[in-house]
Amino acid sequence: MQNQTPSPENTQIVETEAKRSGRRAAGTVRRFKAPLITAGAIVAVGALVGSGYAVQGEATAKAQRVEETAALSLAAERDSRQGLAVDHGAVLDVRAAKQAEDTLTVATKAIASAAGKADASALATTVAALDSYERLSPSKVFELVDTTKSQTDQVVKAVAEADRVAAEKAAAAAAAKAKAEAEAAAAAEAAADDSASSGSTGGGTPSAPANPSEAQAIARDMMASRYGWGEDQFGCLVALWNKESGWNVYASNPSGAYGIPQALPGSKMSSAGADWATNPATQISWGLGYIAGRYGSACGAWNTSESQGWY
View 1: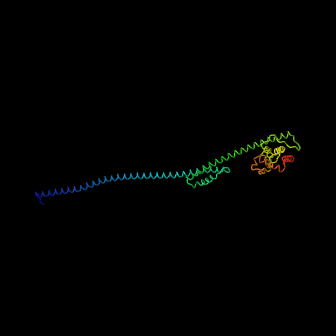
View 2: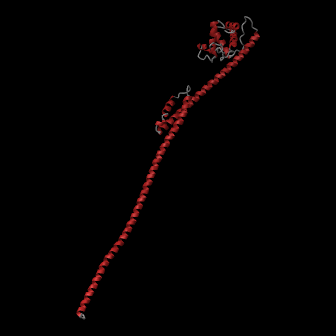
View 3: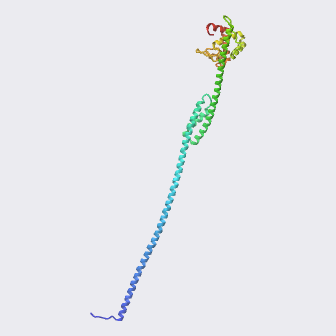
């Protein structure tokens, strides 16, 4: 093996090759470094873009949540309104039914109280319609309730007026009865006094009273105008009916005899007038006709009563 000293020319060639190798290595480094820088930039940009997308996605989700909340609130409000409408309708139904039942109760009583006193036919018709309230709308029920109340008030007022008139008539009848009884008692007392003072006996006739009662005065005038009977017959008549009834228009006995002449039965006197039960003139008219037809005179009837106890 020989030791050789490189020549200057070789040395230059070697240095030149070394420099070229160095430049190639540096170029390679630069080429690798550029892609690395580019990749890093892409990663950084991606991170920034990803952050933007994340922020945007969160905002969108939040907006969607707000929108959903508003929709739910609106739906709840709508359901609430619908629920209120349903409740309001139910309240109307209950209210209509309650008013109908209360009104029918009052109206039915009014119709019953009007029997024989007032005309309740219109009210009865309205009540029949209202009685079907379960099949009617609340507005129709309320309309019928108002009509029924108005008609009920009219019937109640008519019944009250009828009751007032009836009470007045009853009071007048009671007063007339009391007056007749008082007059009959006075007439009986007067007849007893007259009989005692006259001392009539045997075939004598009772004396006529000096102060006849109202009923007796009617009889005196009627017997004189119809039959021509005078004071003697009047005295017999006063004594006869004083004995029978005390001249009481309402007198009656267990056998059914009634009135001043004690007609048996009392309804016989209806031939003289429909007011035979309360009118002394009607009773007297019938009694005088009966006496005239059966006995011919008041004294004839009196004598029969004296002998057998009745005439």
